[in-house]
Length: 387
Image (tube, rainbow, N blue to C red):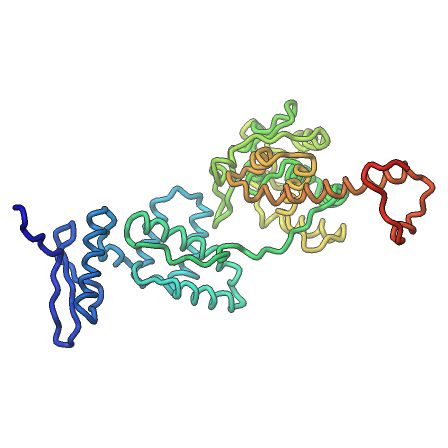
């Protein structure tokens, strides 16, 4: 009716302590107290107005929803995702070894930014396992992002800038001559493996899962359709991501080696694996590691990993002029972040080429000049000036 006073939202009552308690009825019909008491009645009224506004705008969520242990919610998060066997095993290990010991019994709503900072600092102080902390942080951030979307918590407490970035040392890029020295030094059965890993930028699992029907040497291309993960056993599956399913063009340079390998070492039939062990068994990293170590030692290369061949091939592709999109496709990445690393390498190479062009042009312009005079005090010629 006109002039009727609007009923106040919620109610406030004084406590024996002299403080005030505020309560309100949420959209779910439940009467809920404020999470803390207030020193004055006005402070309690301001809090109730805020809650009333949140409900009116649809921003309210159940404050009890976050009373879920982190370990329980993270386990459910894993179950709801399509992951490769290897990725699932990695996430389970990160939870078991790094996250659950600290956060497992804490309710989602209880985890604060300060808790995350203390956990990270303690992890980085340890000698053992400190390299896994950025990975564990990324996993925790992803789990709690879902908790925000599920309205279990208001905001993600993982807000540490750069905490998910791993401090990786720069991996070596081998010269072409070094790649061929390795290919010559390794057991002949694995010569083509070294060349294909480099010049097709393939991962170990993609090479181990490669079947004859995916290698078309007439068209000079390899189709990546399967990959092997070695997690307590060999498991054949799809590439690690949708972008990993791709077709890579091969240089003519390595085709003769690949033809010889198919004729001499590969398993028979179209479904046979291209790379197998001496007894025809499926390729395993553990069995291959000694051949790799012996080859590296024979040619004098230290601290070179097999994965560095893929890194080397990516660098070659960038230096050959590959665009960002072309590099992403060749590498099997959906994100441009990794490809940008190799574009930077190409930029460095282009600067080197530009410098050499300038030196050659300068020598041809003035073949009698003494380069030792370049640092004398004469003013430099104006741009475009002719000698």
